[in-house]
Length: 366
Image 1 (cartoon, helix red, strand yellow):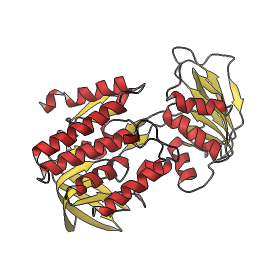
Image 2 (cartoon, one colour):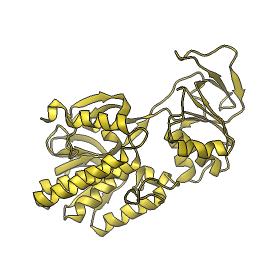
Image 3 (cartoon, rainbow, N blue to C red):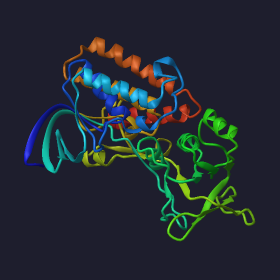
Image 4 (cartoon, rainbow, N blue to C red):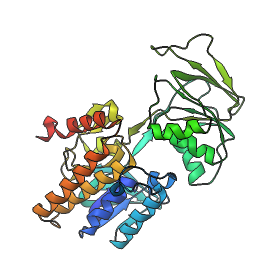
């Protein structure tokens, strides 16, 4: 795969919430861990999340996402995790990775690999969707919260899931007006706690509605929205024109699973978890020996769930490599699974928990 070779005990591909949680947990038991990430800084989505997490204390309720990110980075540093940034993992075969870093290509020989590559935003095509000013909600969030740049002055948000609701509120905090949020489904897709914050600011959330067109010469100047019927057809006479220069698309995420496909992992199609998801057992081990998955690549859920899956995978790998006895490992893994179960008790938990059960109970894993 490459001209130079490096030996790594545990390679973690992706330095987001799941990857950092894996690294910190496995390294805390003595595993030699190297994290590979294509970005200039680790942390992934956590450093875009300026809002406070909610839930229980053990899930870091009341702590802002970027503070959780700094905490994980401190743990990784404390336990000697090595991090290679600006590094693209372009290939995987058995216990080998192909990477490129600073213009040099390497072959990485590993004992175990954990793929925690996260997710990518779903696109939405409509007339004018290629105009400047149409972007994924995550791109707008990166511009605001990481680079401190306003992506526009007045926005339309397409999609009312948690991403759409949270980013809409963050647009307001950044001094950007939000004309409306449109949602094709007949009800709001995200948590009501997020929707209530938006409604209190006076921003309308229009359900059974969609964007029909973006207008402008070289950049967005207007958006045409309309109501839709149960079959998704535009209802004549309901079209409205909104003067906006920013259209954010938040119509779901899908697992960024190319490396899993390349490695030969078996998949299951589960729309509630984002698309085709790599099959894994209750320890996050994929169907390929020595390869584990964690976080959104293993099914789209929340950042708290991604970190908990990462910790579970980290414990399992430490046991596999002989750093943990089976009795102690079982106790710690059971605690991690219970925390995951509690996270899946929310309004979307039943369907996601059932989908996860299908993955772990697949015939492939027996």
